[in-house]
Image 1 (tube, rainbow, N blue to C red):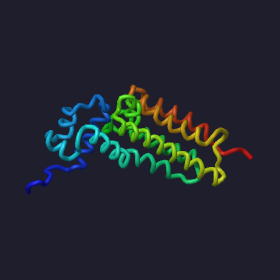
Image 2 (cartoon, rainbow, N blue to C red; image 1 turned 90 degrees about the vertical axis):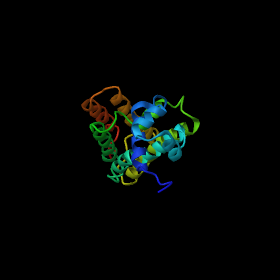
Image 3 (tube, one colour; image 1 turned 180 degrees about the horizontal axis):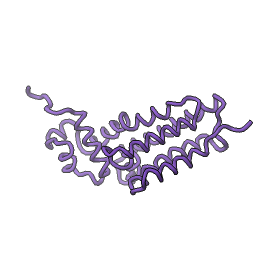
Amino acid sequence: MTGRKQFAVDDALDAAVRVFWERGYDGATVAHLLEGTGLGRGSLYATFGDKEELFLACLDRYATTVAARLLAALRSHPGDPRAAVGAMYTAILARMQDPGCPSGCLVTLSAGECATLPQRAREVVQQLIAGQVREVRGVLAEGASCGVVPHGGDPDALAEYLVGTAQTLALLHRAGTDVPTLRGIADTALHVLHPEVP
């Protein structure tokens, strides 16, 4: 039928996510995106717009698929911040052991490119990281209200630290650090979370 797309849009978007995840925004050329998605130039532009628009769509897709699984893990232990953050780290490390996933994290990789990203893309990356911090801060607040209080420090700074550790895991994984070493880093970070002693 005339005007009907002859491909699965979500599949093409997932393929584009992988291209950006492997190469970064600057490293992913239109040629790479055409090859990765299997689309013709006309179909790519008609469906997703230019490279920046496609990248924004990919960030949204990543947030609602890959990153959503991490948030689900974080929310899996209400009232227990250490178990919740530990579950998030475990989910991150499990993804890193999946041979079907590129190394690292698309958001972390994009954060490293923020100086050269288009303005809208930079803002979206910053918003995604800020959203992670809010989620962790919410888990810490919930734990405090249940009597499980992280030891010492400012809860906002603690949430930034825990998300910063997650971002560091992604960077180190991309640099070739093995998962057992990353597990040790995550476990060390978790030591800052424990109930206060009465």
